[in-house]
Image 1: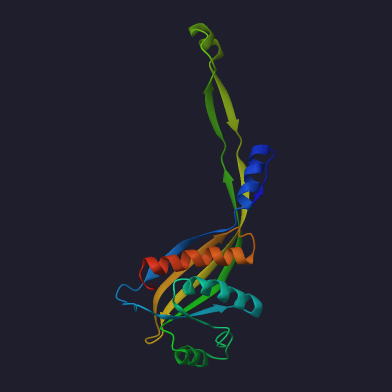
Image 2 (image 1 turned 90 degrees about the vertical axis):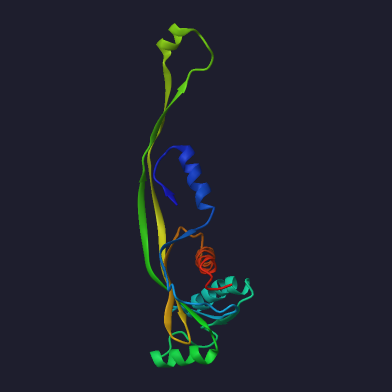
Length: 205
C-alpha cells in the first residue's frame, strides 16, 4: 500500500499494513432460498482464465479449502473443463464427473483505488498541576495528525455455484480482494471468505 506523505509514523504504519497481506470482502451475494443442499456434496471447482498455470494454481488453492472440510473435490483443469470449445462439451464434462455442485470463478476487474484519509486534531492537557492561572494561560497542547492518500490494488472476482443436476444457480457472489502480497496470498484470502460464506449458508458442510 502506497503512503503519499512524509510523516514517519504514517509511513511506518503503511509498511506494517502492507506486510499483512491482502484482505477480501464479499461485495454482493445471493443464494437460492429454496435450494436444499446435500449433506456430503461432491464439488467441482472451475477457474476461468487463459493462463493455464494460474488456473491450475487457483484451483489447487481454492479447492484446498473444500478438501480441508472433508468435501470430495474435482478440479476443472484436471478434467479439461476449462477453455473447452462449446457450452455443451463443458456441460457434458461436468455432468460426467459426478459432481453435485459446480463452482465457477472468473476475474472480472483489476483497479487502483485511491482513498484520502482525513487528518485529525486532538488536545492533550499539560502534565502536572500548576494552579488555575497557569492552566488558563497554557490551555491545551494541540496535536495534529495530517491526512494522507493511499492507493490500493483491487481484484474483483465473480463466483457462481450451480446445482449440477438441474444446472440452476444456487449461490452467486462478487468479492473484492485488496492489496494481496502475491497471487497465492490473494487466492487464499478469496477462498477463505467465499467458502466461509458457503458454509455459513449451509450449502456445503
